[in-house]
Length: 225
Image (cartoon, rainbow, N blue to C red; front, side):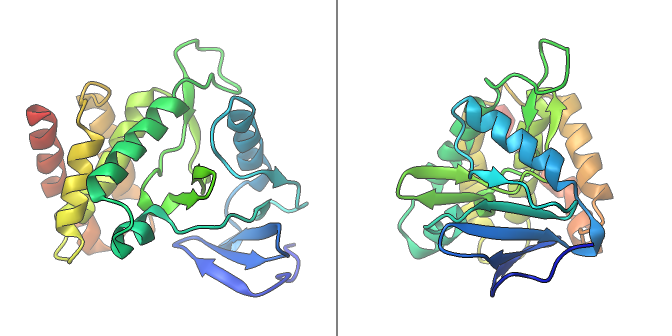
């Protein structure tokens, strides 16, 4: 069973909460008993050993709990909203992070083409620390075709871009920068990413309804890229 939270609540996402431990470490706890913290931590240590920018992790003794290095700095989304990071630059940074990740060999798969995939890389899962960007929230990680990772990020941004929200224009600009080189994104990977997004239990009916329009936007951006 999860232990009592060690400190004050620092933030919450769709599926997890982050608590303070001390000045060096935080605890991320999945709600409703979800997640596999040990497996997620192993992937993070694997990509970190290959030079990829992720927080350090340490065992927490619970399937739902992951102890991570405490990072300083805003998320990429916060920096864009504050005007300290250009939206197009943010999209280019995301693209660079995907390209760098897909140079890391799989941890378990014997398929030489398989790579570590994040599958949820978007502006709220990148923290801009004084040492550079750090990628967080590896709870969706898998191994497989890098095209699926590109498609997953594109779907998230496109969904925001077609939503009736003040951030829609920024999301569209970021999507265009992400897909400036459209070659990593394939139609089969996009179909799979859209299917997974529609099946995600955290999606509202309104968000699911936007996926067809999001797909049209992605294909339009991809064609013009």
